[in-house]
Image 1 (cartoon, helix red, strand yellow):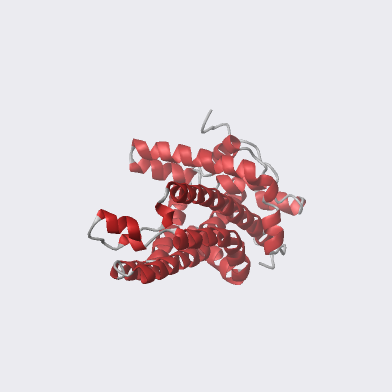
Image 2 (cartoon, one colour; image 1 turned 120 degrees about the vertical axis):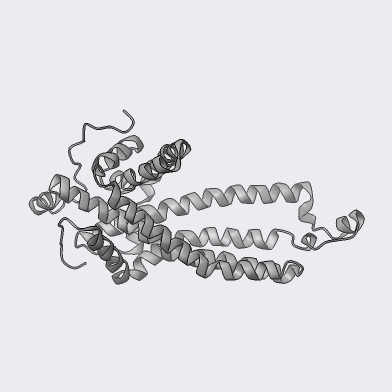
Length: 293
């Protein structure tokens, strides 16, 4: 966006602004999402290559099975696959943190009328990884426990906490403070947050259906052909990578714009910014209503 236009938005305007910002800066947001996810894709493809498929074909006897089995079925091979899986989980979380954090910073710059790049956005996340990880873990625990009570409380809590990441990064808050900040900002706005989440879920499943289901069908049809099974599995991972890269920015952009909209509505953030153009992340007065107090 070349001009600053901070004002209260309807849910339709908020979603329209989300997709407009994404479309106008498509390469920026896709690049932010794709660069960290390339490491995840690389590890997934390594797992596909190393995971034995020859043994997936039915063999008549145990002796023949052992003769045909890959050396990866040895203790060392199994331990290696487990270690690779653990590394994959760690890399996934790091990639997720970088993609989420960098997207929030990019939206903040663009939405407030400033230019940014992929490198600048990603570099700002490096010093925030620990705090951002704490926010995501605490958010997951609170939302997960709420889902245990029944589905509706979990959905409600997810809606109330949907701006905790922008709050944490743009106001330099810790995990607990960022969740309480989100809970306060989204008061009386859970319905709007739900529509944002619903839109994201619909787009996500549409993308997964488009990029994953065809390869899943091909994998099922190649169950007795180890070579093709490996090829289709690798292509499925690539399809999942494309879907993730394209869809992940949508919710983060929408949540970041929603965060600014809530601050404009409740704290006159537009007036604060007019008086101090450098105050993109000015901490606002805390609400007396605490989530974890």
